[in-house]
Length: 413
Image (tube, rainbow, N blue to C red; front, side):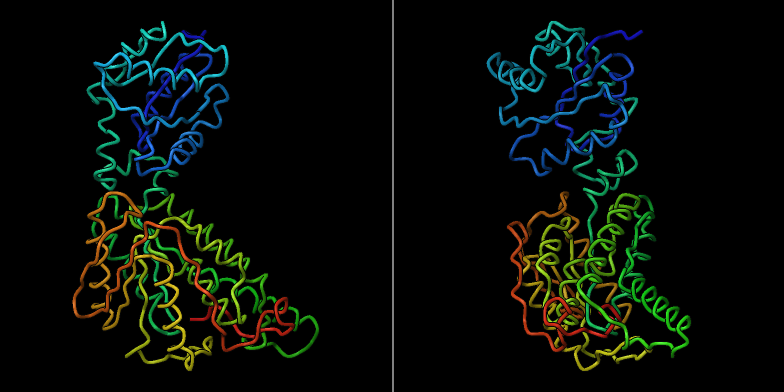
């Protein structure tokens, strides 16, 4: 038998952490119905909708737990009755019409007064944070130190994402793997640092194997890489699979995620192989989670290695230039690296940990400098992304755009 009919839990949940879920769980175990009201001010950096979604995901299997959000721009002053009235009015408005509350669950000293205003029982838990020694303020100040107190969706929302991109045979995969390894060596939550592989490589292998399987069945010669057909459907798959892989890695990994490409890079590769980038690719790229840093691997001083899967040595200068243009137009923070393998890693780590001085991912920062091993260009990223205008690419377009077919692997590096 439940102790209460309807329990209320309110808070900023900025962000939700283990202590918040202890409070919700206690209410869920004691009451027939629970309403969780997420109250966020417009000035706060984590969107209200994200916080609501993060909590709902954890409690979606509990039908009697309802999570709602409300904007609360009223100042906090526990000594002012009118301010109290304003906050409570917002809480009441978040309830269903005619609903009453008979228990208020809180981990704050104000829980007693809040319960009195609802004529409800005050259930005040863990005010001293002895059971769950964590607070939203502490998480915002140092997410890595409290990574274990966060659910996967919150981790993904707070993860600092580093994307390495570049033309063929410029060391993008090597650098991205090296960076993930360097982060793991830092220990703690960073030991969980994830690495997101390039889906295009997987797709290429599957397409080639399928083409050769069909040829074997038909008794014809096995096709080579340059005989594969590529089109918009392939890049739609890249968009979908790459985004899925990144999200999985962000949920499972540490505070920093290293990606061997992303959808912004995909837009350039689609242009390179299809002659133009589909609007859907630009839209998907603009809608990605905030990036902490883009790293462009320069072709300069890097010998081209033909591994049998590459065909773009003559296009590397064009590709590097196009990546620069797209990164500048995007408003993202980025660096271009040159030098040895060790110098590249050192340059990225320096730029990354300069940036990590900001507690919130996606926060705009001013210009920075780096060592002589890389050219560093920092741009603001606190406004909307500007989609670059496509250039004329040096290859035929995809079938649905120009009637021709590209027979090259769009992601070979």
